[in-house]
Each structure stands twice: as C-alpha cells, then as structure tokens.
Length: 323
Length: 260
Ligand SMILES: Cc1cc2nc3c(=O)[nH]c(=O)nc-3n(C[C@H](O)[C@H](O)[C@H](O)COP(=O)(O)OP(=O)(O)OC[C@H]3O[C@@H](n4cnc5c(N)ncnc54)[C@H](O)[C@@H]3O)c2cc1C
Ligand SMILES: Nc1ncnc2c1ncn2[C@@H]1O[C@H](COP(=O)(O)O)[C@@H](O)[C@H]1O
Image (cartoon, chains in turn brown, cyan):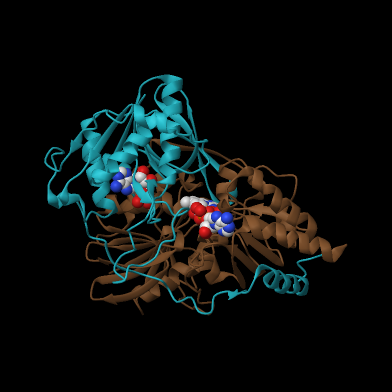
C-alpha cells in the first residue's frame, strides 16, 4: 500500500508530529517510500517542505491562498482529490486530526483507526495496532484490513522520531490539484486563551488537582497545601469545566504546557491530554485512591490514598516542620 | 430549530475501576456503574439551551440495547422532547463507521437543522460525529465550545484547539457538530425529573425499519482483546501508614526542591 502523511505546521515550522508520523509509517511499511503532503500558502509553506525532506522521500506541496489556515473541511477535500485509490494516510491525532480523520475515511471509502499509540504487527494487508480505552485504564489490540486504504490517526508523542533520517526527499508542487474548495464551514479567526492571575508556566512547584477533589469546597485543602509548600495550584480539565478554577490553571494539550521541577498530581487519572502538558521531565508525585490509575505508570512516586484525608495531614506536617 | 443529539451509554470511569475479566477478552462488566457519556451530556444541555432560545425541539437518539432506554430517559428528564432507541442484534458488532451508518439512516428519516454528538466516548476515538457528517454530506466542526445563532441559515461556532485557543468558524445549517466538555454547565437531574418521563413512549427502531441491511453496518475495524500494558517500572509506590508515607514524601520533596 502507498503510504502518505499529512503534515501540520505553524509559523513556518513543521509540527513535531511530522517525524513521528514518518516513524509510524516505517513500522507499517518497512523500507517503503512515504510521501508527505503539506498544504498552506506563501513562503512558510516552502520552508516547512524543506524541513521535512530528511524524513520523507517525497513531499507534495499544495499552495493556495484559501489554505492559509488549515480548515479541516477544506483539507479533506484536497486530500480526497489528491490521494490515489486505496492509499494509507497518517495524521496526527491532535485537534486538527480529530477534525479531519473520521470524515476523510468516509470520503475515501477506507477504514479509520483513531488515536493509535503503537503498531503491533502487519501480516499481509492485516494491520494490528494498539489503542487505549477508558481514559488509558486499559489497552486494546485493534485489527483491520488495509486493502481499501486507511486513515490512521497517530497519538502525538507515541512514536520516537528518527533524528538521523536521511530520506532526501524531493518537493513536488501539486497546487493545481486542489479540486473544488467550496465549503459550508468558513474559518473566521483565532481567539487566544485569557491570561490568568498566576502564570503556572513559570512555577517550579505545582500542586495539580483533578476530578478526585469531588467538590468545589474541597479546593481549600489544595490551596492550603500549596501555601504551605510555596507552590501554585494547577488542575485538570474537569475542574475548569465545572468552573471551580480558571482556564489559566489548566494543564494539558488544550490548556497550558508547564515545565515545573516538581508536580504533585492529586486525584488526576493521567489521561494523555493532561500529561501532554507536562514537559521538562519534572519529579511527578501521583496521589490517587485507585491503585490502577494510569498516572501511576508515568509518575516517579505514587501514593494510593484518599486525597481528602491525606492532603490536610500532609499540609499539617509541612507547616509543623517549617514553623 | 430541530436538533438531534446522539448519546451513548458508557461505564462511568470516574465511578469505576476498569479491570480485565478473567479471560482477558473484555473488561469486567459486572458491577460497573453506567451512565450517559460525559461529552453527550454537554451536547444535550447545549441543544436544550438553543431550543429554549429559538424554539424547535430536541430529539435524543442512541444505538444500543434495552438498557440504553435509561439514558434516553435521563436526557429527556433534562429537557429533551423525544427519544429514539436504535436497537437490533445486527448492530452489536458495529464499529464507528457502523454506528455512524445506523445514525445516518435514522437522521435521514427526520429533518434536522443541527445534529450534535459528543467529542468522544469511552473508546477515546472521537470518530462517529465526523463520519456521520461525511455520510450525510453536511459541514462538520469538532471540539465545539461555543454555538451562537447568526443569520437564518448559519451558526458561529468556536472550536477549542491546542493551548485553549478558540478557532471561530461560520458554518451553514444543517450541520453536524461534536461538542467538547465545558461548553456549558449541564443541569442537574433529580429523581422527580426521571419519574416524570418514566412512562413516556420511546420508539425502538430495528435494522429493517431504518431501511438498511447488514452490509451497511460496517464492522471492518475489530477489537481483538483488552490488556493492561506493561509500562516498565512505573511509579515507586510509597507504602505504610499515613505518617510514614508523609515523612518519606516530605524528604523526597525537599530533595527535589518541592518545599521552600
Ligand atoms: C481534545 C481534548 C483535549 C483535552 N485537553 C485536556 C487538557 O488540556 N487537560 C486535561 O486535564 N484534560 C484534557 N482533556 C480531558 C481528558 O481526556 C480527561 O478527561 C481529563 O484529563 C480527566 O481529568 P481527571 O484526571 O481530573 O479526571 P478523571 O479521569 O475522572 O480522574 C479522576 C481521578 O481521581 C481519582 N479519585 C477520585 N476520588 C479521589 C479521592 N478522594 N482521592 C484520591 N483520588 C481520587 C480517581 O481514581 C481518578 O483516577 C481533553 C480531552 C479532549 C478530548
Ligand atoms: N452507540 C451510539 N449511539 C449514539 N451515538 C453514539 C454512539 N456511539 C458514539 N456515539 C456518538 O459519537 C460521539 C463520539 O463517540 P466515539 O466516536 O465513539 O468516540 C459520542 O459522544 C456520541 O455522541
């Protein structure tokens, strides 16, 4: 099967996922040529194409003023027009890939594999991949035939980039092949998230609280611990959804990326969207009452206990020491 | 506005520890607490708020079994006007494309201006909404965190992308939107509300009533098993009584600069 990868980029830089998609493709079809497709407009687009020729043996460039912002609906049309029959296409499973992938599979008449974290094996045209379900609490092997093509969404960070790749790809301009670019969805503008009172991206010590806190009133025990430790309070998405804390406190792919030295995760299960916002390899302590919580697989230190009882005791002890 | 909201019944991951069964081919389903998928609850709330602003009706629909009746009633207790249960033995093996094909057949029997799904369900795929839109040839936007009526035949929607940035789009009706959490604050449903809808008739539609056949219901993507991955060492677990644990933890935090 002929494999392609759709590359997202911003401000003239290819997304980190570009090399990860190349790595995943190499596992699906070892030794085969893989073609990258990059859409956009202007100079930035050429820069991005040049950046990725080391990872892909061919780069297709599609330049159109209408593709300056990657509107998932338009890109779907472009890809449906460009891709040969029964093609396999890899896309990063980020907010753009989630928008594009499922509908694209329908238009191509191919299978769709969402949020793939590993390639298990390929046997003829039968591909077996690894996925996660229930917020990462269990994994599954998922199998499908690639005979009619496939749209394969790859979870960012799951495949190690080959830093020494030398694919030496050439860039082909296919700007003339976009096909019809009318769509019922029109991109208007981007609105940046609001800045909060505390900048958690600059803090060395974060006490992060998740849905395990159970009630807004219980936040007090987290604030008291943070005060005793000289730390700032951060949180997972459900705490913001419930309007218990400001969006500017949310760590994760749709929140902020933090780089603390110490990260105390209290009542947080450890979804990849949350963990994706923690960079710089901090010392992570997870406190969770479920011994099977996925966060224990990635934390440095784990404590199985009820945070509602444990955190006040911890605060008390720290206050005792420092007074 | 006629609004269709696709909802699904899932084990509540906040309430349950998900474990493998002894054969390792499924999760242990006995004793699990099921409820409506978190994302779908936001979608239904949003639909109700839109209806209350501009008029029309809200229909909740699910592909499921007899037990799914209960989540439809729950969402009707929230304020949805109608419920439809799509149920047939032939649906049991359906993958995401299969579910979307079943929903498509049902959607085509009505006349909806807006079709809402959740951003994702327990499988974390987030696929059914986009597939349904493509099958119906309707415009689609995922991860929607705001919907505003604008003009007669369109809505202004905000999609939440990386870093919490909102991508604003104008999208023409009819369309399909998948809803992200946090778009609203879903209302509380009390026992009284549930009792009120306990006897409402919820039509059940089978594969033949939907006018589709087995071959329309795709099952090309197959789950082979469930397993717990071996993630290497994992965390060093602190054990003992609370006092011992706290002493150890404080020592570690001091060493790492966690206590000032
Ligand atoms: C596109 C997209 C983007 C997303 N972006 C983000 C993001 O930026 N950030 C983010 O955080 N999430 C994000 N999410 C949501 C993410 O998928 C998870 O739903 C979320 O991270 C779960 O938060 P949680 O761990 O607090 O809650 P849960 O997963 O519900 O976990 C709660 C944990 O608390 C434990 N617990 C319960 N009570 C107690 C107690 N008393 N004591 C101790 N432990 C207890 C439970 O065992 C459980 O492990 C995103 C989702 C999508 C689809
Ligand atoms: N069995 C189902 N019946 C109705 N809607 C569903 C079903 N499965 C998924 N959906 C819808 O599709 C959304 C995304 O689910 P998924 O693609 O399974 O992650 C859900 O939030 C629902 O709105």
